[in-house]
Amino acid sequence: MASMIEGVDQRTQLVGHNRLELLLFKLGTTQTFGINVFKVREAIPCPVLTKLPFSHPVIRGAARIRGQAISIFDLSLGIGGQPVNDLTKAFVIITEYNRSVQGFLVSNIERIVNTSWADILPPPSALGNDSYMTAFTKLDDEVIEIIDVEKVISEVVGADERVSDNLVDNFTSQNADYRPHILVADDSSVARNQIKRTMEQLGIDTTITRDGKEALQQLQIWADDDIDVKQHIAMLISDIEMPEMDGYTLTSEIRKDPRLQDIKILLHSSMSGDFNNTMVDIVGADKFIPKFSPDDLAITVQALIEEWKLER
View 1 (cartoon, rainbow, N blue to C red):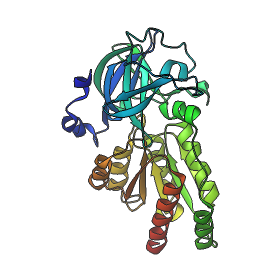
View 2: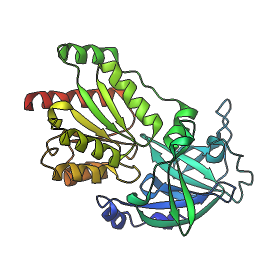
View 3: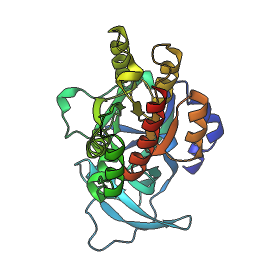
View 4: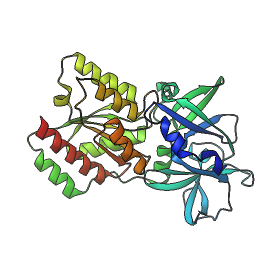
């Protein structure tokens, strides 16, 4: 299975063209799920797991993989399903999310498919905030669900959302006479709330959108209403992986529009690595930081707001 995700150099050509590859898998039912290949290090038969005392029930154990101890999450349990029972036939998808490496136990690996973010759609609003579906698509008349893995991880291991007091004090003192406003684009409800709560601690107002297409439409609405968008918002904070329009494509579209092209853009993604820093330069974003560190986000936002204030 590791050979399925080789050839990263070739796949990087998809990025910036609103395309992606999905690794398809199952969780013991007929439903097929997908995960972005860029989040996947490898997919392997389930190794022998060592049970961890007092761990969360979703964590089935740990395994030493390529010299690194990795916690293995039962993804079916994580989204409220039945546990994967026969570990001798199961697989583990090793991923990198939010600055950490973890494995997701699945019952079967299907295949990799090449598709477009335009065909990845947000979930129906009727599902509500309790749903673990962050997007879906249809392939060969089959619905493929994309799980909000960030939500699963957050519920199992928690997340620190508190900005250090010294950073809050420094930010509020430098912006005592002005309350900045930023636009946020992220398809994960967990990530949207994390960013919003971080910004609230800094005294920053936010307009929240669920994906790149919705964010671009909001910017265009402001511009069509003769609002000077660069004066109206200090910056855009955008995820990279989003249904309908990814963060790279969103950045490229903004840079093409004379009314929007000077907006500060911070790309903020659970995908980490030097590759994203390279893409920042290619698409014209101002900065990239990996999720999720409230202090790193606060420091980066402060720096970009200072630049924005000087350019106003």
